Image 1 (cartoon, rainbow, N blue to C red):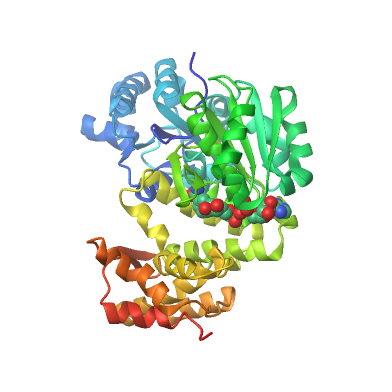
Image 2 (cartoon, rainbow, N blue to C red):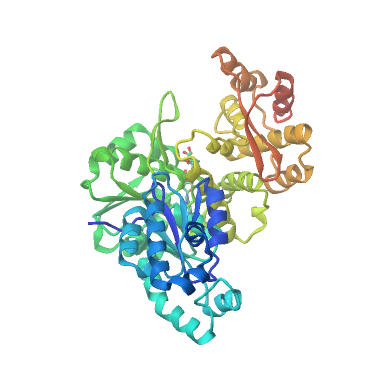
Length: 489
Ligand SMILES: NC(=O)c1ccc[n+]([C@@H]2O[C@H](COP(=O)([O-])OP(=O)(O)OC[C@H]3O[C@@H](n4cnc5c(N)ncnc54)[C@H](O)[C@@H]3O)[C@@H](O)[C@H]2O)c1
């Protein structure tokens, strides 16, 4: 039995939709964003036939065109390397194509209303089926149910397509639809923490219905990520191989819930339902899971992509202000990397854009072999400050805010990055120098790595939206930047 795919991590992405939906433009943008190759089936058919679609229709008839189209789609789907494939508007009419798509692709329907589609294509010479408006509208009505039936996801824009490719749903009120959003098979165990459970477990339970067989409430914060807490959770889980863990909470809950899913019975599926801002734009997305052990934070973990991520920005209403600030640091980092002031957007859109940004990077590099390193912008300095700190200060968010200041100041000096970006970081995050031991911080930043035979590598910004990674800094350059982040005690 083939169950409906929830993401395109190891699959092709097929874009379906009526003519005029914008599949070609969106498809090539999506391929670029995800670092995949792009196959435009109509263009491939024309290339193979050596003539236009209109000519093929006129000289050989539609049925001949459909055969060429079907063959091109089959070839594209048989390629091993996952690509983005823009299907022609009538391609889903063929049963063989529908079957092949179910097996090898995540099919995303690009929605367009009939009026807009007609405005876009009427009069186009190479659209043999867009001749008269009445037939166009009739064909639209006939095809729409077929598209909807075949689509694994429906979306209107590039951001939506990226989110669908990663199996991420971002929508106010999404928690109430949790039952229909998580994979359809198997029993469910819900994992949460003592704060979030009191606020949202009842709604989650109602949405999950009678598939829910157990609920596990962990301590809040990093205490959820201890080995003891993890072990207790595993001992208590009543699940089997085909079942599902749903992790509802901040980054601590999704980290431990995801790691339990990665290891329980050698790996079961899980759904991530992040409730903090850190979780919604960062921790709950991308498949990194971990617990802490005495020798270090996040030292034991696994890459285990969630079958579904359900982000309900409405849940942020109850998040304490300090926790929101923690999340804003990661969100501002995404905005700088993207070259777009996402922090100026209304909450729900801000979360959507930031989550989509993280997702597009991690979909390109799920196991952190390359471009995912750019998400460490500001983090090399931040980790050094955290290591030199004490009693939980600076917090991770405070340290990231300071790390961004250092990275952007150096980027300004080296590459002439517009100082407005540094100013924006200062305005939004208001980072304050922290009173930590300068030498300890310097050792953590530079010396430790030099002694270990390496050199610290930094992420900088050549321009807004244009990060460079693996950059080595001169010692005095790094020291000057670090010192400026530290207050005299
Ligand atoms: N896996 C990854 O890729 C990744 C990325 C970044 C961070 N992390 C991890 O995430 C953790 C930090 O995540 P965090 O900042 O979400 O911390 P957290 O999970 O401790 O949540 C912060 C606090 O907010 C509470 N909370 C969460 N959602 C709430 C809501 N909607 N309303 C009221 N209270 C709410 C929690 O109970 C907790 O007390 C760290 O352990 C970090 O290592 C993982």
